[in-house]
Image (cartoon, rainbow, N blue to C red; front, side):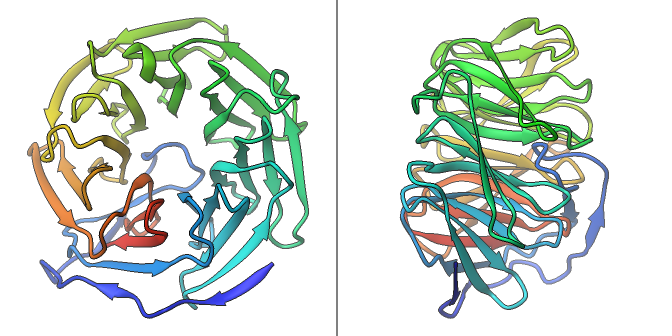
Length: 339
C-alpha cells in the first residue's frame, strides 16, 4: 500500500458562479450511493494525475465521498482522498486485472477480475482481499466486466463480455450464478422493477433479465447502434450510449421500447460512458473527444464541457452525493471532476 501526494490541480474558468446541491432518491447506475445534483453547474473542472497510470479506469464513489479507481494494467485499486487530495493504492492478486469496481455501504470495494475470471472484495481498512471465481472462469476466462449492486446490497450483478453471460454474486455467501446470452454483454443497470438491463453491443440489442424467473428478453436498438453503457434515471427511464452511431437513447423499460434518440455533438466520436444525477440530468461522453456532455431531458438541451487535458479517454463516469461528476482518463491517467 502506498500513500502518494499529487501535483497541483488544473482548473477551467467557471461558466457560471451560482450553483447549489440537491439530494434526490435513486438515479445513476446502481453503484451503492444516492447521487445528488448541481442545479446550475459552474462548468469548473479539476484534475489530478494518478500514481499508476497503467490503464486506470472506472471511478466509483464510496459512502465517505472518496473515489476508488481500478488500475487494470497495473493490477491495483487506488483511492483518492477528496479532502487531502492524495492517493493510496492496493495491489490485487496476481492476474486479477480489475476492470470495474464499486463500493458498498460497508465500505467494501468489489472488483471484476477481468484477467482471472473472478470477483474481488477488498477491505480497505485491513487490506484483506478475497476472490470469488466464476463457474465458467475458473481457468481465467469469461471476462468479468461491469458490475452494479442492488439497493439492499444483497446481490452484485455483472457482465462477462468474452463469456457471453450475465451473472450474479450473493454478497453474503459469495455464490455466483450465470445466465447465458450473446453479443458481448458490456454495460448494465437495474430498472425500477428490479430487472437487469445489459448492453449486447455486438448484437445491436439491449438484453433484459428477470432475476425472479431467469427469463431473458430483448429490445432491438437498430443496425449499427452498438449500445455500450446504460444508466437508470430517477424517473425509471434508461439512458443508453450508442457507440456505433454517436447517439444518446432513451428507453422505456415498462414499454420495452426505445422512445427517442438524440445525436451527440461530436457525431460519430464514440459515445461511451453515461450516468444520471439525482434530478435526472444525463451525463455522457464521446471517447474520441476531450469533452463531456450534460443533457437535460426536460428541455432537450445539451451543454458541452471542455476538459482541461487532452487524449483523455473516458470509459466510466460517476456522480457523487453532491452532484459532482467524476471521470477517469484511461488514456492520459488523470482523475477529474466537473462541478
